[in-house]
Length: 274
Image (cartoon, rainbow, N blue to C red; front, side, top):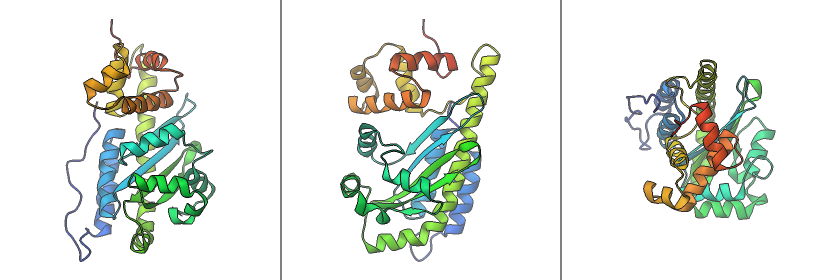
């Protein structure tokens, strides 16, 4: 089920820079993020204030702990799919992702230029996919929750770095709001599933922490479709299907796609097909 999508649009009044006043954008974002009820709508809403702050892309990675569960991982991004597939292929995590490592060790934001020199190949590859430079914010919440929210430009150079410095404070406030929204969505979804289990089934309207495209892939996998068939039906490449299935397995905690389907049915994420 799609989450609540705020009906209002981000502010359109512009200043001399061509952007809406940042105070208006952040106020709109705060209201909109409080209203979202799914990860899909969170991702859609976040794109607007990020763009108004001067950033083309964003990346959100988080881990949230729920009662009765080890944790739930969240990954949201509007970056090019080619880059997300590269990250999946490299299995980037806190052990080998320099941004995650740097952000997890400090409370202050991490401008990419500060660590680029230590990982030139990684950042050069990111730039080839349109992620030229950016800034990452680590947020640490209660219960051991954490997230990293990155705002990314598709151009580099001194003007871009100066723009990042000017927007750093607003980006950090926005990152905190995103963290809180994701935690609320994940915990409500977990509570809905737990209530459904207690009642002998899935709770009506429970919104699992999966995107709509991931649920589509799960439904097709439950039908016994091959990756090639899924790619044809959804008009994407097989590599994209592999990426989505890997994300599903990671989020659900399954060793393979068959186990992911079984767990998704038991959790009420998808319906059983006879």
